[in-house]
Image 1 (spheres, rainbow, N blue to C red):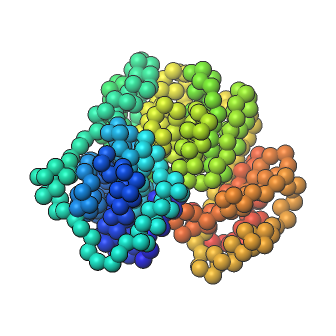
Image 2 (tube, rainbow, N blue to C red):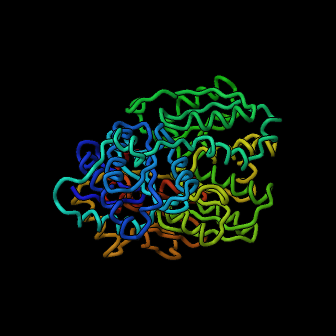
Image 3 (cartoon, rainbow, N blue to C red):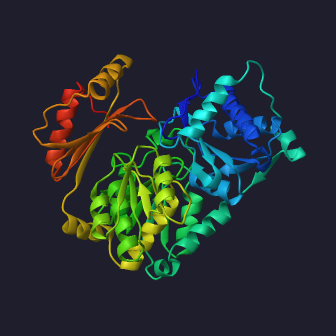
Length: 477
């Protein structure tokens, strides 16, 4: 099976594409690429999450790096992906990797590759790695046994958790949080955020409870993605215990989900909007926002109000972080729950985002429901629906032909302003609103998004697109 990177790294079903042989091939290719570039002397860093075989796969990769003569630093603890990104920058390395499949179902695992500064590898880098993989000669890949690598110093265990936590503590207003004594409940979703996030919040004198904290490679039988369906337990805990906020992170802690003080799921679009407005209005920051094509245009309205710009990029956080680096933007994010803020790591961090949300509540002295209510009153309704559909190979070919090659569209009953085919098919309507259909880069799904000035209108427009594509009646999420 060939190894191909998607929008969030390489992911595959365990025992099918995700195998020891493929992990070794990917690592050997990356080691050769580093040697050819002259970056191998700087070393390499590997971390892993709580998924089945993550630790073992990290060791397989470290053994190949050591076998190739590349010094390998291993974060020998179940670690959040943002911690690994931070560590690549902290140790001044050119490359690193996290063994994780992020929010994918439990039968998946994978690898995310990071480049200098701790950024997600872009298509140029991942395409180059794929070329190196394809060029590997047949035969056994040299590998130094893990324990032998530790004895010789080719493999070194490191623990950047304290520097990572300290960097977040320095970045948020801990005094303001201490003054509020907020009641917070955390849901790591059986993932890796508990140590870092609870340490930060307890240091800020928050009253912290934690649910779903043990390791469970099956994630309690749920998708390890924080959404309205998977956070029912967190919602109940918030309401039953009168918490100020419920915070959830996905399997590798780069994405965030929130239950507000009223027990309502706060969509990631709203989290982005709240934080951007807070940074501009209350902290006096200046700068643009960056969002992907499937994320709320309310960010554009806020940017315009403050004389700033909101940039649209394709799906994949490497595009968001790249545009932020280019423009010096204040915040960047996506509707799936990932965001980053200027001055922190150049990638998604659910732990830092959570700390910043708690700071916002403390500084403003207001509840999340009140803060978003004020924004809705100022800018009007922006309602989004999102649905996902499975498809056969034949259906994918048919839909791609219909939308991307023939460029056909249904009659939406609205005047179309323009259509973009930069990443899927996105239709922008005159006077506001949009609908998007695109194939996921991390799961075998076709996703349809629609944002309008009312939930009923958004539902109707999305249904129009789905019917046109022959997908009605097969919604899976």
